[in-house]
Length: 479
Ligand SMILES: [Zn+2]
Image (cartoon, rainbow, N blue to C red; front, top):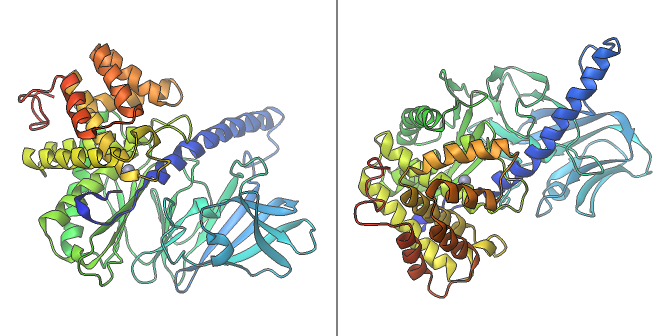
């Protein structure tokens, strides 16, 4: 998720954006499915399983990180549709094994069709990993140690003509006695499976044995440096326990954490990419610099990992649509990660301050190019994290409470209102601070082009009544 400290990294914004959109449609489908099954039961309960899937998807692991995927449709169709992802991943990395089919792209969709245009009810493809990392997208297939891979089901999940995901049941078949890991499952074969979150998810296939505790199921690449494994196993359960406590609720399913470390040979590289989904997050570390337990590597690893963990709780609050600014949750996750690291004893107040000052500097630099409200359009993702972090801190100072405390309320509010917008955020700030002048300043800060961003950050913090005593120096005290 993070690119501060001057290292290359990728944004995980897509994950949460995707999450907002598909969670809403998935929810609509759950409601619909529920009604249909009630009707079936009321009319005599003819069916054993309440509602059959529209499509059965069998994903078989093949050698060298490839998959064989078979689609079986309950009603024959003229085309199998997928919402297009940027680049031409499916068109270039999928091969149709069934005879007499073609794959093409039209009107923002990938389509699999028969050459003769007839309806069909079954087709098999093979899929290879994307080669180059897809930007702002979950990776369809990622290597996880020797003979292991992780699938993101979303890219293999067909959509209906209207664009919603088809009701699908997945079967996973690993190679050579490998295992499947998905949420609490750890098994030889997973049949007729649907994610407990009714949402695309990560599924691991391969020989690794997960580390399971009462609260978490983790799959860690054996190629990861030992210090990373130690840190991950020791810190993550503590961070999760702390977040459960602070947010006031536990996660609905035992979360999965996946850590891959295809480090490569580039000595100076220290790249952390993270993706969060409901109940799961995955981390990919690249660059040989991870082998050394340097202060920078430790700091990036810890802050980024806890940032992803925070998303697991934030996922309970959904943005109403794709257009809701991601500075809200990305900046919130950075700030809460910093609070958590101090609270569980991994950071000193100096680390916290340094992290905040880094965000402030990056935010100021990013806003030179335009206002925060249009940063996403400019593909300036880092500024969303950095300025979101600054804003979260400013709010925390203004109300004299922790960022986590704000989010505890914000999640509750978004649940009651069935999603949140930027306006929901401002309204809650207004309610909690009772400070109109600060909220006005905050709105301006987000929406107006700023001639001197650094000065405006100073003014925002002044409007929050920041003093030497309540500056983000000692987050554990007072707030
Ligand atoms: Zn994030």
